[in-house]
Image 1 (cartoon, rainbow over the protein chains, first blue to last red):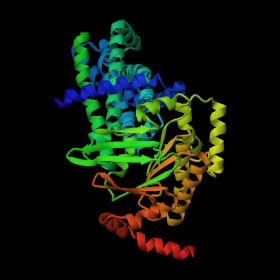
Image 2 (image 1 turned 135 degrees about the vertical axis):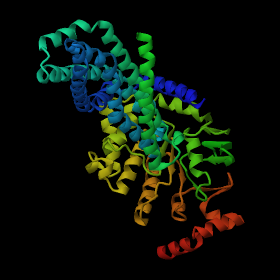
Image 3 (image 1 turned 120 degrees about the vertical axis):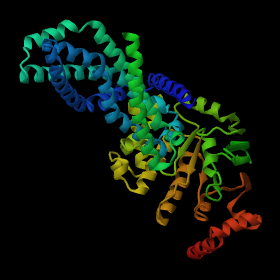
Image 4 (image 1 turned 120 degrees about the horizontal axis):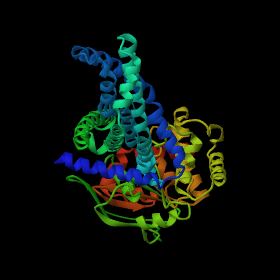
Length: 249
Length: 257
């Protein structure tokens, strides 16, 4: 029951933050800071994880496909796995680890330090000021980060498949372009948007409500909020992935 | 006494604990009223109810005859706010400089343009002797300077009422006096009404026009500081003697002589 209640609260929280953002002053400046926090800072980890995911997939899939004499399908297998599933999911999990936990901690500290109360006394909407820009930045950054992850991953598959294991590079890239349809890309972007909104809303919600939701006050409460934000977000991404996939298939 | 801030029957409870149990308080315009009482008795809760940070369970709070939620909206339209709040731990934003912290309410909630904001904040920083530290972050400021930045932020919107929640916590005696002097000085200069929560007895009485003693969820004494000894009920006497009121005030008088 409490999960349903929390889901409702998180939805209202996210909606309030988005609505609050459009009533803010200097929206572009705040949005730029949000994009820096979620997009720019997460880029290195997304690129690194994307590359290694592609490298490992190239290896695993090559040795599986070669048993059936189907190593020419390596490009198809790597590209579709990444674009449909692994790209959006791993991007979301990496952003949660990098930006989501930091956001939950920061908001938790701001709550404990009464900075959020201070905003209210100054007649500034704390949700629109602190959370809104991050949510809007999420809508911009998640699809781009997912696309970067997919591209670098496919390139990683090419490195192991073609450069190391001698799959013809023309065949690899031809299979990639032939097999990936617009519907696959669209599905990946829908997942990226949904995962972004869910994860950042959950992380911000946990941090913002540290005083209500954590079992301990003070520093322990903040660390609990950050931990729960990461765990909840990760589980939610996987559950939402199953649901969206079952609708898209 | 004409009541500028009028509180009637204010009640607030958390779970089973009744913190405020029918508070009645009248605060005159441009006065300094200090709320004293034991720790955890509900002084900050009272301030937060007045500042609209907590929703009271019952009772009314009126500012100049208007319910506070209404007065807040009206005042906002002409680039001011009815209430400002100076938090115990300052609540400054670490990622903003002293200038940006003071300018924040004007930038985000007023209709002033950039040049007007710059002028008003510069003026405030000069008053607060913070001009040289305008570009420094809170982490680079001393405790006293942080208090002044927080005070500047509280006053920059020209509020009608400023609520001070233990403004001298963690300061040495010299700094405590300078913060109290600063409050008294700015009250005269800007003409706001101040409501203060403090444990610094009797130092805080030096700047107080009225003292309210909060006990068992109610205001049990309200009057001038000099009436405290003669008018005191037994429980209040006990509280004041625990706060070393008699000893400290005689010491202070001795020092003044």
